Length: 443
Image (cartoon, rainbow, N blue to C red):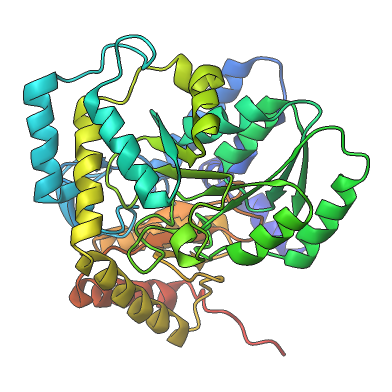
């Protein structure tokens, strides 16, 4: 009998159960993998595994915040239930606008004037003067003729793609497309194909292949900044290829707005493509500090969306409070460039320090900073160590990222101080000393 088999045979039932439950990952519980027809038996097993992992400090999701989501937060500790002061490295509020005094004041003033809810979808009685003002401001920001507002970023992508694409059409996605883009493409019923991430030779081959005997239109969808790797799409080259092959182009600006461009307007400004892109999608939940989404495009395109995009037509309008906050956020973005400047200072410093340590931060160029661990258990254990050091990071396992790319996802903000970042680096050093995750030199 082998040594491993002897060890396994010597395990107590408690140790065997521990190893079994701690070895489970989120990928193990996707609904398609359930062994029996009973869906509730599957959810019960999932509940048992995740509860056990939480007891071990290995299930750091839905931690309860007790303060505003800024560079420092108060969090209810999952085990002790006591408040814990932490450095927040898991927020997408890249400019800190969600807690800006002007933005909060605008939201409070809107509550006093308009109440809390919109009361209806926009086509009926849910369209306010504030919605119109925000639409104009976003059209100016993205260099387009008009803009439509949606309740969430997810519903924006689903609503846009499923409105314009159908069974005769072809959707061409970057291989790292966001789940909301994939879901919109699936809902549309269009043919779906992909090209290698940010690979222009691959994109051109796909455009050539799909152009042969095409019955419908073709829509290429990319992200200005990719949400897990933090790298930037080569939008100028993509635009030229798409136009060369007579297709349409959609850009998801969720993580680009407020970050890219001389004045933070996003990818169109960064690549000098304002007014040239077919669809510019964006969200409010990142740099603009709110919630919701939008599409900026030509007037007739936006008008069509208003009548045929089900995610818009059948949804209640964003609340006046939310909309007023976003109007103020646009003003902060325009009049206070210091926040974009501070963000980039933090990006350059933090990335340089991580590279000195030989950590795998993929191809990141922006505030999104992955630290690839490559193993789900180790990722969870490192997240626990960081939590105990009062650093809040997001663990992202497969299948949210490719296999063997389990990672910590850290997000930088303009409101982080150099002292904050140095404390985070020290915590990462401590975790690395216990569970080495430096990149290995090739032999």
